[in-house]
Amino acid sequence: MTLAAEQFPRLLHGMPADAALGLRAHESLHGPLPRPPRRGARGGHPLILELERAGLRGYGGGGFPTATKLAAVAAQHAHAAVVVNASEGEPLSQKDALLMRHLPHLVIDGALVTAALLGSERVVFVLDEGAHAALQNVEQALAERSELAGRGAPAAHVAAVPRGYLTGQETALMSVLGGGLAKPTVTPPYPFERGLAGRPTLVSNAETYAQIGLVAHYGAEWWRTLGTEAAPGTRLVTVGGAVAYPGVLEVAGGTTVGRLLEASGGVTEQLQGFLLGGYAGTWVGPDAIDLRIDAPTLRDHGAGLGPGIVVALPESACVVAEVASIARWLQHESAKQCGPCIHGLAAIADALGELCAEGDRHGAYGRIERWCGLVMRRGACALPDGAASFVTSALHTFRPEFDDHAHYGGCDACLEPRQLPTRPAHYVGVAP
Amino acid sequence: MSESLRVDPIACTGHGLCAELFPERIWLDDWGYPVIDGDELTADLLEHARRAVAACPSVALRLERDRAARSSGEARAAGGKNRPLRAPGV
Image (cartoon, rainbow over all chains, first blue to last red; front, top):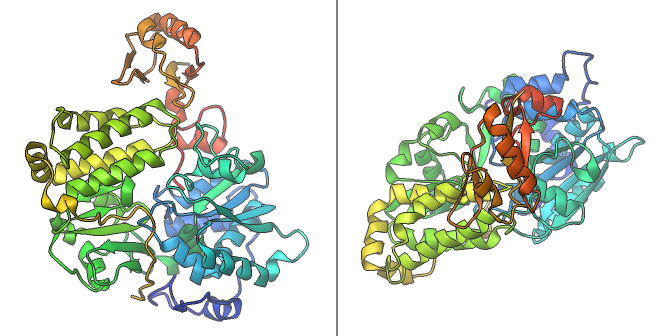
């Protein structure tokens, strides 16, 4: 145990600027991976209890308690498979690619203690096939691990999956890892019941495993030293938009949006609002700058941080055109399996597109919100729900801009290039 | 023991027979796909629900038991027949 509890940053501590932290450097920082104690007879596994005490929740967007999820998989008693999801289909998030590229051993630590706990025979690290450096660094890091060489060690391998917004959705991920298309399937069964090769499978986000690794190394009490009661520990946030240094930051839980902007070098122009949580997230006005980014506070504002995303939208951008373009992109990224999603997203994107051209010529503007309500909870996955939240929160937050476009059609800024990306920008690792 | 209706959104192709047969609990959206009231079915409605289920050409409509139990974490952990509606996020 070498990192002090107050030491900040934690996850990104010792991160090299342009390479991966090797095993020796990793171990001199955090010590060797503690041998996980065997499963307790009845009282539950010690590591699960420790994760529960830590209050660790998944960092992939769902925010589900990790201990509960682990216990559900462990209860299946069947050598569950462990899947580390770093596929990161959300173009606004780059934290998982950053972890896999620069700090693979921290993620591997978490995956290996989890695998030991579940008696797993298989651990799969899933990365975007375009993340060449990360793929290479993870392969190299796995080759360094002696834990994987011994008899009875789980088979660990790296899977490169095609880029796509839905690829990382957990049932789509099971499908693509099984040789199928990256399309969601109907649940149940959930991966925790039947996933990889029909086995119960724990699918979690790469950052979640890195955090599990920290809890395994240092314990729950240490882990909770930073952050707040509502948002214990630290987390990674990808900050984008009109800030001096867009990129990935580690922050203590419960910090404010304003502090995040400061840590990103400050804003570069006047802001009209923020997108929290990415393209399945929520728009909020400029007064959100004082908002604490912990789940309960954000929930009170009808928002969430998703996989840790904050985008600062500059005054110069046309929010209507930005929202219209992302709505169209989401429609294209849909798996096109469920009727309400196929037709609903098309109708919503068409109506938004019209606003930036000739205005509300067909009278569809007034129906966008109803359509958003109609697609909610009606798909096999949550893509339509996310798209609906993205669009309706924009309508609520920027009502004058939308009304204006409905009456008068496209504005000058509509003709400028779009600012919200649909493919990941090259990230800048910002050391806080 | 109670039962409720559920549709498999991938299998459903929007024939719309269900809404015709069981308008008390099923109506069609702007694109012809069923919107289902998933509340518990009372005994007098059960027969109509069964008829709608049997008529679905895509076998996408189902009757499910014990909707209340599906949302309990215990049932999820047990991994039994009664499962929650949504998976924990990844």
